[in-house]
Length: 350
Image 1 (spheres, helix red, strand yellow):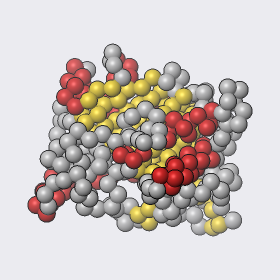
Image 2 (cartoon, helix red, strand yellow):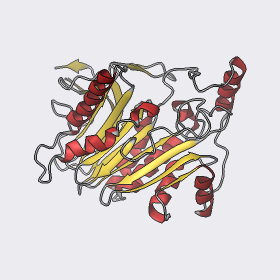
Image 3 (cartoon, one colour):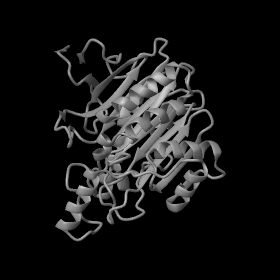
Image 4 (cartoon, helix red, strand yellow):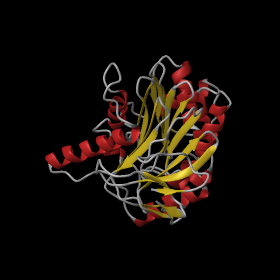
């Protein structure tokens, strides 16, 4: 396993050793680095975990440079050129959930989802109802598209007739920001936000903002968030499965570490698809348990950032542990054996 000075602490199987850690955060993808860092810093200040995660997600959502990753301001529009966003939050101490689907004209859908959890009489709002709720709560409408996102749609619409079978013009069309965390008291939470698949049909909703599918949090086990092909991920409720594996039985016996739980669920999906004669889907999962151990796994052996061109031999995730934030790469593929995480810029290998 590789090692690097200043990287987030790990042990041999990729699970963080708690050792009194006060803030453990893991976010999907390298572009989640600032979300992980911000959330970790907030938790260290005593901010509730769910509020810290929303603050971290907001940093990414409102940064137009991360829009090409299908998140927040500058995200890729739908099939008619409108930017619709999905977001959800879940709190582990009471398993309460808040979500918004196909939300327009809001720069931070995660903030609106958090307000749904805390203030609304329902758990999920969609479309015009989501925007109406946001406005009632004092969230002002704002321009969420950028010159880059408009150009992307213009090129798309000129090149071909819009149809649901048309592929996005670059890379994977379903990146998502998912962030999970644990504080010193073993309290967990999860936040997910996305603008969804590029040039999707109007009103399309993937896994991201659906409980058990794109995220799940329960202080009896931990928290998990997923990213990948949302239309396929939602078939398997992977995040609920990961949290249940981390929980074990009622006495906690048989509880898996986050790394092993993520790998086990992805492998189970692979076996189920194989039985049905279907190809494996694109999916990655990040998770943290109530001991502060973290882990991640993916179905793909490598990944290339379609914006920066950086290539990774596995699934890169942004990890924060007590003031130290780093991008770690978790072994890709669906095998449930082997080593896991290592810093991307490691200078030596054991």
